[in-house]
Image 1 (cartoon, rainbow, N blue to C red):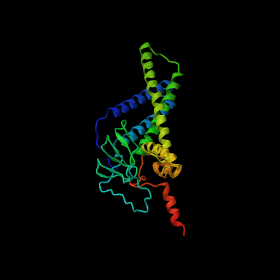
Image 2 (image 1 turned 135 degrees about the vertical axis):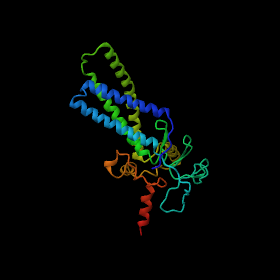
Image 3 (image 1 turned 30 degrees about the horizontal axis):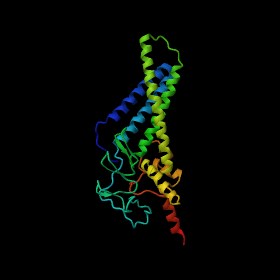
Image 4 (image 1 turned 90 degrees about the horizontal axis):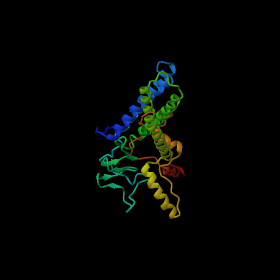
Amino acid sequence: MKRKGVSFSLPVTVVMLVIGFIYFSTVFVFIDRWFSLTSSPGIANAAVFTALALVCIYNYSIAIFRDPGRVPLNYMPDVEDPESPVHEIKRKGGDLRYCQKCSHFKPPRAHHCRVCKRCVLRMDHHCIWINNCVGHTNYKVFFVFVVYAVTACVYSLVLLVGSLTVEPQDEDDEMGSYLRTIYVLSAFVLIPLSIALGVLLGWHIYLILQNKTTIEYHEGVRAMWLAEKGGQVYKHPYDIGAYENLTLILGPNVLSWLCPTSRHIGSGLRFRTAFDSIHGSSEAKP
């Protein structure tokens, strides 16, 4: 996989600081206060949360530095290829999609990113929090990061609430004020973050089950409206069934669904469609 260049990003710096704060408060305040870091439950919880934090950082780093997918300079759509029953065209004119800024044809599901200033394969959206586009090659690792981030936030919230049930012992006023500040800041960060990431996770689960990108969802709303206006039924061409859609994004091996592996994704220049099975079955008939 290609890697993109490194540049300073304030949102990415903020995310790393938030991760560091949540880790510090969870391990050295919540877990220590509830179980004590010298006890077996305390050590076990600290080890689990540390592993979860490391996995989050690892997947987050890959999402940042992995190139989301470049269109080959020599790409040329083959309109006579029987293996490609879907050829995306411009909304106006009906011509094949061509990027005037990049000076090349666009493969199916590719879009030009104004921020990255180039076309991205199977572009979902540009995310300021990773300072990168979410596209063909890094979509899975982005999704996996969100899964682990939601898990870590909920885990930290449980530990926060649990630690509040413990009666403070030998705490002077200065220490009590320090802990109250940590608890208030942690709640202020964790509650809205858990909600926001939970909504984001639910949104992308929906997209994966439908085999849509965020861009395709919004385009599909308009296409559905136009189809209904013309008395037709719109169906997303890349939706091949919930389980098949899952395996296309997360991989054929269920055990690797939460790993940042992406050997199964293919070139990003052609995708299976609902018309493939129809095309294949029609050829099989005598």
